[in-house]
Length: 146
Image (cartoon, rainbow, N blue to C red):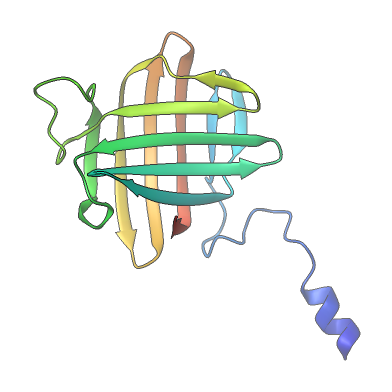
């Protein structure tokens, strides 16, 4: 009986451990697809940072919501520089950065995302572009506060 339990706890290699079906938990950048394995959020002085992560290799997409509490997030957002006087925290997110291993891409200047939450789960779909190229992706699954 113990043997059967051990077999049923084997590593889940098809990225379905997110509480959903695992489909779509990835992003495409410069023509390459990268998985998204987890999501976290962090609160910092009137700002919320959402990170979409994978760990082999260490890849990450980070979104900054200025003057927005995590509990208040939800809806459709467009990119606007955080220093733009017309920045509206109910309609805009202010920064996005892509980390691929040791490479950092932060020259994105347009984009949009849709975000919804249900308990400890988040659904986020996004598309943005800049000099480094375009990024499209989505994540549906648990999110943890840090």
